[in-house]
Amino acid sequence: MSDATALSLIPPVVVLVLAVWLRRPILSLIIGALVGLVLYQPDQVLNNFSDISLSVMADETIGWLILVCGGFGALIALLVKTGGSMAFGRHALKYAKGPKSSLLMTFILGVVIFIDDYLNALTVGSTMKSVTDKFKVSREMLAYVVDSTAAPICVLVPLSTWAVFFGGLLVDNGVAGEGQGISVYMSAIPYMLYAWLAVAMVLLVILGIVPAFGPMKKAQLAAMAGKPAKAVDAIDEVQTSDDYSVKAIEEEFKHADNLGKLHNFMVPIILLVGFTVYFDIDVLKGLIATLAVTLPYYGVQRLMPLSEMMEQMLDGFKSMLPAIGTVIAAFVFKDVCDKLMLPQYVIGNLSPFMTSQWLPAVVFLTMSILAFATGSSWGIFAVSIPIVMPLAQAVNADIPLVIGALLSASSFGSQACFYSDSTVLAAQGSDCNLVSHAVTQLPYALLAAGLTFIGFLILA
Image (cartoon, rainbow, N blue to C red):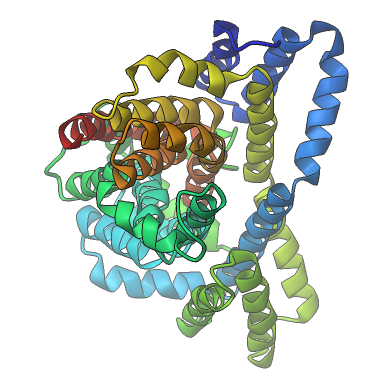
């Protein structure tokens, strides 16, 4: 295809329909990618699929993601096996007196771990699920709270991986001077409306000011009745349990040390955050350094032999394979959408509305659609900056406001898309079925997005 056409919209629609119908995101993404390649070059589907797959697997970002996700799985497995997670759960239960306070603790923990949305999604969910289970809070509600304090919080904090990445893009594209990327980013923080509203929304839901409605209400009622759906692998399998709140805890900790100490949980978590900050907000280096210290720390206590620790780490790594597979499939799908020129089609059709008054709202709407359709919040931002920012300067629009609109769209896509990395990892960390998580939180995300669109119209 030499020109962007409406045909580029077909693959995202196919993926969304199949994801809801089949409840198998990986399969849905692969089928969507194949449909896109048929539209792109019908006689070269196999060759193009092979080339794109190899290109994605050779991408440094994918390699980083595999190591980070697998490393998190390994660390979480150690925390569970040594009884550290159980000890944290016991202490947390002293302060959690009911569903509301347990979710409020989850929210606070999500705000505290602001360094990276991956770190947030995997750490908070796996840490708090035994506590929220105790009070019959649905895994869907837990995953929603986790997801709402992942990307939205990271966007608002200038010391996060999001700020480092986007600040660098602003410099690379001439929007900010050398060394001024973070300061320009900070000037746009007040205008990152979706992130602010998403955080406010989840807090209002926790406090009961905004009631559970739609699919979330059904999930909450099922949890209170003791019969919610629980994902075994957080991707494809669903099972029910009559004694959910009890059996879930027993299953998670059946191999854990009942005499686990709190410090065996807190020390690795503190090290992880500390090392990540020390290595210039590099989560992978922070994770490697944490494991390098944690293994001898556990070894000195003779909690288990080194060989057993390695086995636990491998099992933890394997537990992350469904999440890794989903994100890899999403990257393949995103590349197919790029070949069909989906971003150019959407931006081109909305460009007539890009005046100084309409630009922030149109940018938010456009980029939200693209981020939701492709599941690529960072990638869409990288593609759109060279197009949007010169246009913003040409129509004399407020630059921090436009940057805020772009970041709002990125955080919306990260949270709302069924197969975005943040959504996948929030579901994985909370041990919640991915599609159930996406469907239950979508109404809240859309409500926040609608208010954000109105807000940009008012501000502009």
